[in-house]
Amino acid sequence: MEEWCKAASFPPHFGGTWDALRDVLSDLPEGGTFLVLDADQLLQDAPSEEAHLLWMVLKAVQEDLRPKPFQLLLQAEGSAYSTLVDGLRALGLDQPDVAR
Image (cartoon, rainbow, N blue to C red):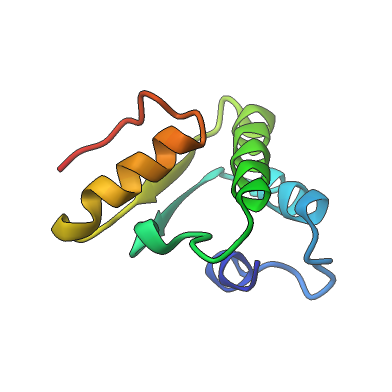
């Protein structure tokens, strides 16, 4: 949550919960595109339910902002690419839109 807060300049009253994350991202006036560096490490140490919650929130934000764009670009070094794709598939994202 701290990384999102820094990247999107969340307001000081941001509550740091999943609902609060959805609220502030859904309020982005122009939508947004976020680049996650070393994405293979995203939620690496978090319980798997945290990863599922994150993806559910991001999908809800994308719907909330429609037709404004909301994109998450995931970057991983070549040696970590398969780890990232495997992790996305484990979350039920069987057809991640990936580019090498």
